[in-house]
Image (cartoon, rainbow over all chains, first blue to last red; front, side):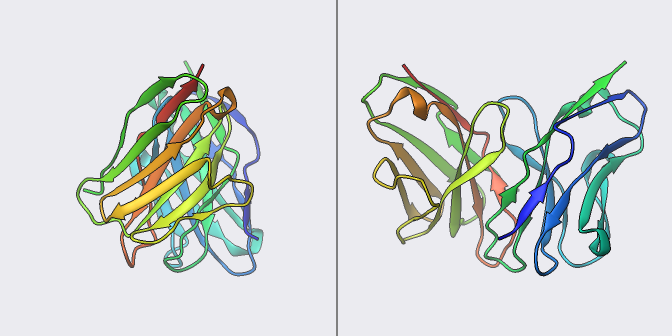
Length: 114
Length: 115
């Protein structure tokens, strides 16, 4: 079965600092990988996705993630944090193809301080 | 494009009653819809997958007689929580995807409180 592990349930950064949210996956074959953001009492918004094309994926709001097969990782980064980035971030994995059952990580709450 | 709505956004009901939550895809035909449950400060747990015109496939541990899912059209799926109890209080989120697509689009969620 596929799974994702998000290291760090809570990450705090200063405004303007680098954001790094970690995600490692477990899958017998390279899967599809996703990062979602959730603001309080709202649904999920897709930040970016990896679907077997370029390993460096750029998403919305200045976020990007790099798929590293050797490390089974898909860490999310942003060079400079903004106060509006404070939210819950979920990494998710699905099988290749359109069957697309998503398995979510436990989430990382990002706090941005002045 | 790819907007998914849910109604209601929040609902309070008394223990023992049933409540229906609607999930609509507004600008695309959703051949598959998913229902998730999220407890406070926790991740999303998939409850069931529904394909239009077919019976839903429930995940292990989800009571199909308690959580009734109907996906009668390409734009609407409903989740009915029957004989609700306080432990059913949660945030329910649906997602939808079109045929041939791997990407799910999420609704804004429905907060259910059972008193």
